[in-house]
Image (cartoon, rainbow, N blue to C red; front, side, top):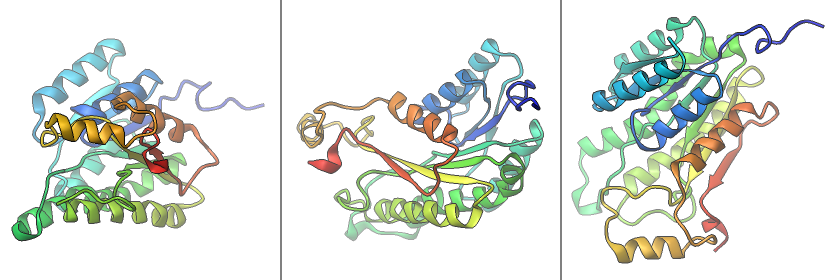
Length: 251
């Protein structure tokens, strides 16, 4: 019987966008702990990305790099994909986590917000998936998109552009699962109340959000990271979006 890749000591490589902070940071650390080499994308959080890479390389030498890219710039996306796939000569997992999130009330709509929110949440995952396709096919790898548990059935007040972008990412996940099968699996994780956004500081609002969950508590970034890890290993799962929302969907 021939040896598996793992038995031969081949380390898989994961590209995680928005890896410097919050959920992306937890995803990067969780995958690294499972033996992945990590390409940590960041945009403005250079110091945080550098600290992450230093930590991961301290655990396992030459196992992490950080790459800066503006995901709303197509040329930056292509450059990110090229460097990510060439650094270790392979790519097994792409996690499209990076996201812009802020309200856009109907009386404040503008092209800048439209380009930013659609660009980071929808256009970039599509372009990055396309740019990484060859490497992912070669590795028979996977793509996991971080979506949002609210957008399809309970859109967030005053977030029409963000909601449209994440709903689009849900559809893109299913579409890519069809188009990239059978070589590449594509799934999504849809977080609920996991970490408070900067504009969610009102105690009454926080209490209402938690009350809307069946479990009656806030989730943790590790809950999303563990879902990503599961889907990265689930070899017979594709075209699936996993809700990690504390049971909000059944309330």
